[in-house]
Image (cartoon, rainbow, N blue to C red; front, top):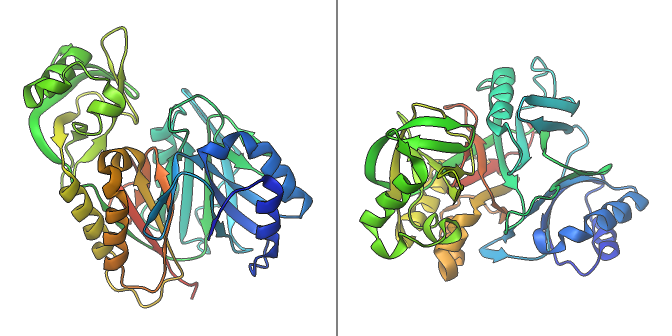
Length: 366
């Protein structure tokens, strides 16, 4: 459910008064209220609420994008919350994820600090643990201006460079689409380190990327990478058997490197991509359509890239309305404007996507 935000006490009181009796909540908080995080956690704790969640640039309520308020998702008693700290050398579970032999968990919601190192390591570890048995949906949390600040929280407080896994007993059906098309390439990522592309085709990546954009749109050659260039000409990694994996350039370093929002492996084949409002909106419809016509749906959670929101502008609500009308279930869309989208639908490994529309249908437990 969506709650307007006046103050921490009001939100905690509304959660406590809800018909959800388990008093466990996943909270997605708009970043304009981020400074109120500690007060909100304290107010919830006083009322006996067990909460966890993340801070996001914006939210989704039905066919409307919101830059304020909270999306609150009730968690069943038999859900399990795991918390990890990420660093460049690995990750440490403060509260461990479920044993992979425990088949009572069928899906999860994953939230991760979008600026944390080693997000790919987290994705790989979770996929190694659960394989295709569990389906996952989630989002990169963070502030719209990419400030460095803790954005993942549990009832114990805000956690820097953290990831949250909420394991659920419900089955999850997923749709994943982006609507971007290759316009130049292929190029070889001849040198990279994590989310820093150092060389493309054995040339400094920063000037190479700007030159490729300039060939497509000379007026963008010297514009800021974020939010001007990347909202129109992102990069994509070639992927066999599915849509390419999008990568969102954020800025060019003094060393002429391109910093993107997620890791790019050395020797990857990469392309410059482009899309327009119509192709992005059609992709959202296709993602919902890919979910088919399930017999029962309890909740519809959407993770939609914040840079898509910037690209679509006034048409963002049209994208959401298009997705809602394609939904073959009597539930509302609710979710987040994400800084990276997380999904695994049993047909491909767990990925941290960029510039992608991900929709997940949670089904009642059998």
